[in-house]
Length: 433
Image 1 (spheres, rainbow, N blue to C red):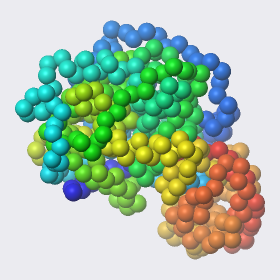
Image 2: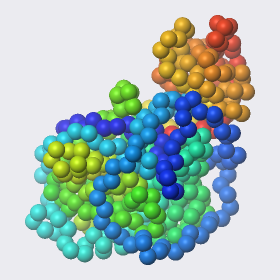
Image 3: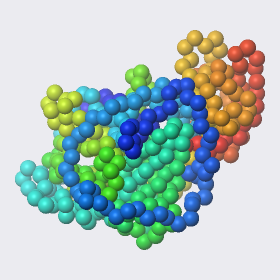
Image 4: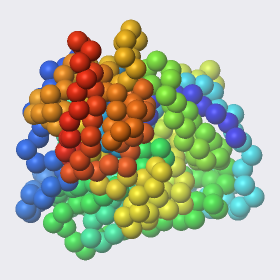
């Protein structure tokens, strides 16, 4: 099993309508909370999207390395600490930074029609035409950050459950989903997320009779199998982009960190291919030569960042993703699975260096948020939650992990004059995480 080190998986992804939309500088002047968070009732009906234009035909595209943005603050809800590190400006997976040596493939018989595993001429377009009605564009508004994001998703049920990457919706205060097959756009809400394994399920509202995407048994995938990757490349919308490749390794591990190189997260058991993924492809299907999903495209590397010059794409095996999605759809929270939206304190966590008091240092508060209403402000240090000592930002995350919107929590803090305070705070609905 090989390990790849990459920029962070956590943080927000931004889709520029022209110039890139970047997150607010730290410390920001926080905007008011959105009037209708994604966990509330959905707007009635759906809106039509213009028909696909001539520029939206399927196309083969190479890896594009976009300018990265940095955010050093953290915004704490009640599910996990959201660390905002380097992220490309479009919805994309992390960029791997080290060469990957293929691991030994399984003994399963490849499904590819040719000896070298490549797909026959025209086969990719045939596969894409068959599965396009089961693919969606996922677009998000990052209301607390002044940005937007775009990615891809796959239809799980006829009633509109959608499978995607967690990082596609991370930070969203509203989500819309556009059906590739009809061009219609619908509001969506978060069913549940698994940030550790980068899987999320969202639900669209107002649609029915949808076509679930066909899935294969990813345990039968072998090195050398031909694959097709389909997604909302560059957030362009319209007919998805199509790229092809072969499986080059199995059981790969990618490690991602925040901007400082700490707070590492790991995805393991990944399928590695040479299909050149693009920003916006995250959450889209990796398909076998029979047009069945074997993985969720989740990470990519630019060929020119490897001395070998080869492109590397990484996908979460669909067996793993389906198991997590089933747990989410059953409403079963777990160590890494969160159901619905997280609870939200509305505080920005600052670096703790130089603080005379052990705890989570508040860098700023969201105007109108729960923490602000309780009297917390920049420079305060949160020292306790529900009677449990808080000695760091990580401890605050752990203490709030089991809480949901509407929960009451007792918060203790020390202000800049060393005066101690306590208040009971009702958590709001936070952005998706």
